[in-house]
Length: 114
Image 1 (cartoon, rainbow, N blue to C red):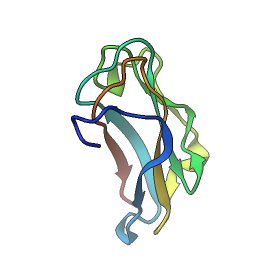
Image 2 (cartoon, rainbow, N blue to C red):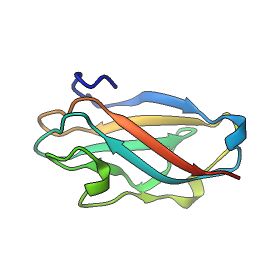
Image 3 (cartoon, rainbow, N blue to C red):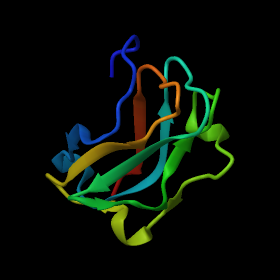
């Protein structure tokens, strides 16, 4: 997401397919960061694998913060959704944004190699 553009909510803001060398890898960590923080409320990001969320508690960025690593409520994985296979589709959704929208969005997905 462009660093000068305010975020908007919506499904399918970005997509990534899993390459063959990551077949059977497990998602071990995720992080979301905005370039400019939003204010009032949280910005909520969901990552889905083939249309199903990988979280039981979604990733959030708190008001005036720029990263999900400092969220008051940390994300929790749904373990049944964290193993990826070749050509799985990973989808990034923005479910909610702060009242004053943050700008830019960078998402990191870490995986263990099989």
